[in-house]
Length: 190
View 1 (spheres, rainbow, N blue to C red):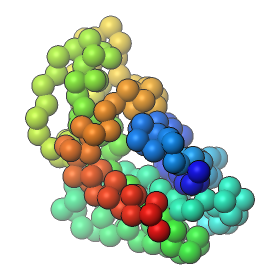
View 2 (view 1 turned 60 degrees about the vertical axis):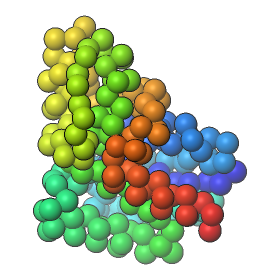
View 3 (view 1 turned 180 degrees about the horizontal axis):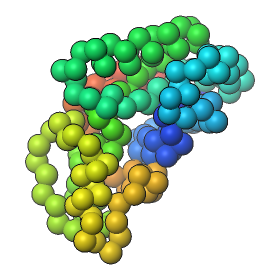
């Protein structure tokens, strides 16, 4: 089994991506959340720079998946550059053994890639045919479309929702996720 570290802004994000990726890779990859006590803005702190290399080595990971939200569109080059620089600076500490899953706006945008499953979970019939990466404030949008449902969306539901999502649909509809999967598969080969 190949061990792959996961670093995210929030434990819910890390668990959600782990649950989604395990649908395809559970027979080959063991996902190991790293630096669990560090959340949000702490990902920019010196604390992570100290603990990440130690945990990476202790867990014997082959590489790391860094999960970040851009909180902007790709066209906002300054924000895009800042997140890429954050990734580069952190990844250098583990011999450039990582890949960045940069979610445009938020991780929740991936749910729109398999809106049918989300509809079943929440007993709604939301139609969505656009590029999920163009949804501004996906968390807010999911809350809005479930506001009249018996089961309202909350971001803490993401790990369970992602367990049920179809990874193939998300890959087909979400360009950033598709690019990530190509890079992820390459890392597994090397």
